[in-house]
Image (cartoon, rainbow, N blue to C red; front, top):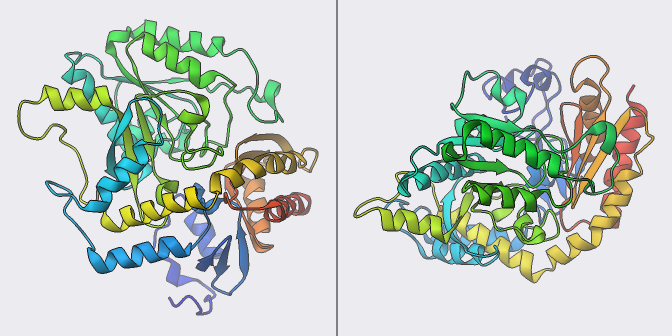
Length: 444
């Protein structure tokens, strides 16, 4: 279908494409088409201008069609469109690896490239299990995740993840995966501004109980997000990640931190690990790594883990894993350009400046119709909306109303998620929040 063609009454043109994470029947009745994008805005097929209040899908941190990123992709496509990823490399992927690892704390200084956050999650889990085997601890195969966690849609990611709808249709998943509760009590913490300041030891004791139940000698890794993004923007307490690092280290369990959403500015810093002063063993990346322009992800790996594979393999392939498109030249070129933009155009500085403005604006929605909770961290917020009867029914209507009135935010069930582009100013934040306010007042 041509992007400017009229939408037919029965919308049969929708049928061939099975949309992901979408109510396809509802979409067919009310299609939404993005025809182009520029800066902070999308433009629909009928040429309506829509402010992007969700950074694409958490990924377009410096806006859309940034000229430096566009130029880098164009030049790379004309230079080398594809390079084999097995037994070969190309200059830009080595340059990118060096640029990325210098941003992370401690000995996190190796990068393994993939094509998405889902692949990064499964890759990190495989690395964790294989690492223990390399060290002679082959019994360490169990994995621990967290309720509300989202680590992509591979079998590893959904096994360790804690989102019910992502799991319930797909059988028993990986054996030996346990889950901690999420450290947030809506009754006690609703409408908290920023991170709750509560005692985290209850949650550490819960983790210690899980470890004691199975014995630490059977557990390979704990995997968490710095905050639960796709799970509704639920925010852990101050000091939680630091204590989690201490407990896992005490028991010889690897800590995997999923920074697919938080890396590259969402918290006003290069990554959450640096912002919180925590050195995980493995970090997963995607989305903002190249502004969402070409599919790409990565796992950042501590030296001792990398060395265990190198030293533990006498000859041949050290890690039997990878993808045809790992380190794709176009993705690498886009990522290098994105890193240049983040550093040279003051993107992190702007994010830090507007975080308190966003925080104040989003919490001004307290008291609006059907708002039962508001949470925020960095440039991310979750607004919980009371359902009418079925999960997500009212929140979906709020999302649609805001979109119809020129602002794109996202709802996941009853939670409305807002994630401003990092180069927003006060005007764009106000427009986003006021569109949500108007939608809340308009939707019964």
